[in-house]
Image (cartoon, rainbow, N blue to C red; front, side, top):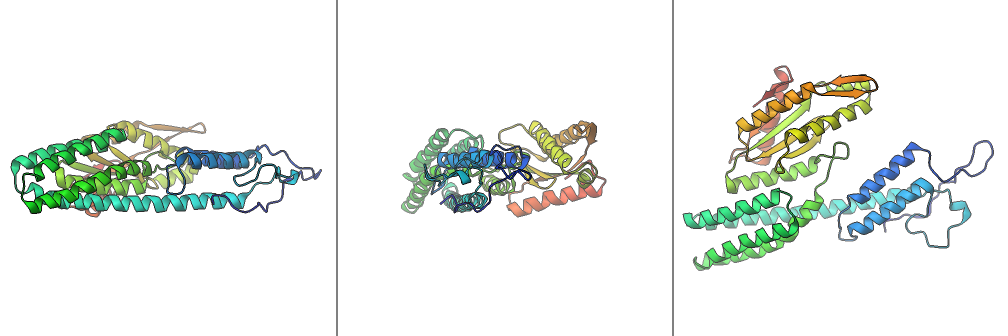
Length: 367
């Protein structure tokens, strides 16, 4: 269950009079805890055990419990005694959050694994079909490009399903005109693509955001990197990866404090969103002060132009903090995806380019 045993914490009392304190919170820590619970509920998604609405309702109950000591989930109506009014069930809250994250992790891991298998089978089978006829290859390629564009544009699920079915119908028509062995291979592929429709909607919900910057987080980036490499093998469209690292960020934390450092990270994230506004541009926080951007259908020249634009915007940016202004610079590494690259190789190339930019003096980009 999503709630723990009865709280063992003692109720709060006034230090001088010994009388119970008000359940209402003037404690910033309690306010922050309640806010985090509400955010957790707001961005909940359906799991095997609970749907998103149920999880949101539980998070709201726990938030009220933390703020005003309202009854926590699992408390039976009519059985709340006066001594429990100011108690807070911290152990129950910890159990709730722990179990929720465990179930989310299991759900995401299972679904993404299945998606990768489906895409792998899809690419392998389709490669066998495309080899034989240029006309069929062009028709299939057109349908796949349309499907890829819809998937990457955050379109509604119905649109994704419709485009997936169009691709299925096209491939099905071609298989009827081929030999029996090819027909059997594509018939199996058709069944797997039908299953993939449901997986696509789950994949969109499973994308997680970095809580500080509201950009995509490392896990979401790793998955998008794999998808980009797989689609590139089919389409042959160019793609570039940018890695950006804030220069001397430790000095900001040491000189201004971690609150200032967090503010700088948020401002830089906002700047990235403005520089890379396309729906297909995938901007993520890689970790610490490092950020990554996947540019679909972008050559090295285009990526370099956008990287220079980012450098200029950061140089001009001023971050006000407690009556002072913080100025920052950034170093950028760029790598274009080659057809023979896998995701780890592509990432290493971008990281090496970033290292060169820093070695050459920072506040610059390297390819």
